[in-house]
Length: 191
View 1 (cartoon, rainbow, N blue to C red):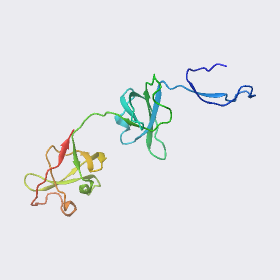
View 2: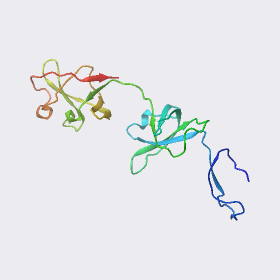
View 3: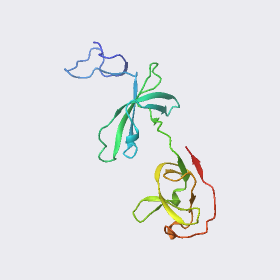
């Protein structure tokens, strides 16, 4: 018998001399080059990803590999609203093993963002998520924001001007156009 693909026998299913019926499996052959990292992407982020995009796959074993997005599902999973993506990773030496947990990173276009405490996010009367801030004349105004991601010590948001004086205490007790007396503190800005 010959396998139609090159690879490694994962587990023999039949012993020498065993009788097999037509269509029974006699062995499982795994082709480890290339490997495929499979993951799910939120419906919020799927438009930022394209086939052919570079990716980095880091295995739980500590090994890292460069790969390329080869497939994006055309439809979301009905329960999770996430899209399946596949990243192809060259594995000529067979270092990566099938079934190992992996973290896939996809470099997206950079944009300016502010890192804030999620506790200062609020809603305006139209239900938009944003921040209340104070302008140069100490008048309050609302800035809608988009949450880009989070870390243990805050969330990154876009939609704010480069310099903004954000109301961090009492933001829900003021309305747009109200005069206030701000107490200043500095926030982190990054790209």
